[in-house]
Image 1 (cartoon, rainbow, N blue to C red):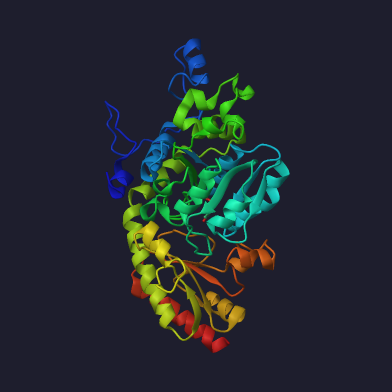
Image 2: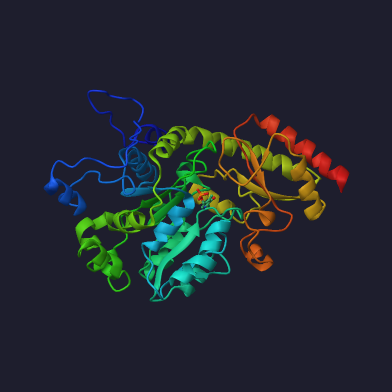
Length: 427
Ligand SMILES: *Cc1c(COP(=O)(O)O)cnc(C)c1O
């Protein structure tokens, strides 16, 4: 099936005799056992079923199966937020003294996690100077557990060459982990191009309405963990926290995602609420339709800004002069994302005057809402970084980031026009 159909149907079959067409909300913490033996089989991960909603829940499981189908993976794990997804995905591979290698164009909080939190837990992050595969390859060593990138960087808008990154990682026995939040599986499915693990903030396009936090980890199921037993002891050696279970033997292709669930989520506790899973499923149903309109509106906005003499520069990967134009054609069928950045003439003062004059477009830090949103990364999402770190992450002081919504495009353009006029009057 194609994306539009998967988004509506995958992972749910109505149960007789009720046959509810909408996914039921299983607002329960626990599940009754038939017997002590049944409970033991569940706790041994031998029987299929539910134990406790911190680990799994039937409503959340529908969302997990649907996301796995959308991304072409073998399994998925939903958690409380995108940030919990990033953390749990890496915790699963963390061992003191090991490292991950990452591109520098990262979401602000992911950058903070990488530079200030994970190193305190013994997992060091080697941030490359650029997103170029040769440079990433040079940073990988015997202790590297993963290569990390955002398929489309937030807010830099860089498009990573996923197939080339997968090649340099796989040549050295390392999996590629891709945060696919900005592109969404509608525009790009990283697993098809060699990625091993895909991460999402469901808060953004997949939920799509700015109501609900959520995150997901999708396992591509193809990385040969058992061929790299020395590098990945956590999947190949008996797990003392699970009375000697060997994940790669017990689960085969779903070893990684099962360890994320039964080792990481079980102990970190960042579970997604069943009601949130239901709300996110409502968003997922229409994600393909919405992204189509987001992309269409963003192109119109990018073109209008580029023509406007009050605008100094526009960074939009759909322009032929963009360094990412060819990668957008290769990975996204030529459809650039609806996240774009630009600079107003008049530098930081001009940018702030423009930002403060917006009326329809909302001033906030989020993206992928049906509504158009604007943010000033240097003072918000990327504020904790040094100026040099901001530059590497693709953030400049005057930069405005737009997440173009699905309103009528003429109304969006009219708001941008009046805000640019206000900025021009003030500077
Ligand atoms: C928003 C975002 C996150 C974090 O997601 P939350 O749901 O806000 O925790 C991670 N990565 C990217 C690329 C994001 O845009």
